[in-house]
Amino acid sequence: MSDTMKAGDTTIAAWKMAVRNRPVKQDLLFHSDRGVQYACNDFREQLKGLPVLQSMSRKGNGPQTKA
Image (tube, rainbow, N blue to C red; front, side):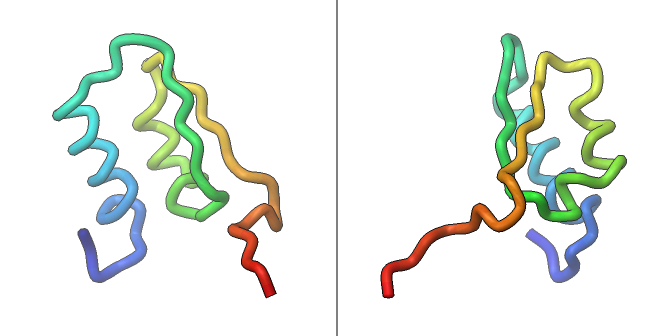
């Protein structure tokens, strides 16, 4: 969606498109990695006032690969 990693151009733009197409009407668990775009205040403000619980993976809980 963007050539930058700014939250306004990535996660916030994607979130706004998602809720425009599918409004949040009941409790929602929003799970993501710990990326700064999800943890920043600008993104968290988007979730305020909605029945959304933000959840993030623990540090170091990335995808596992077999050797």
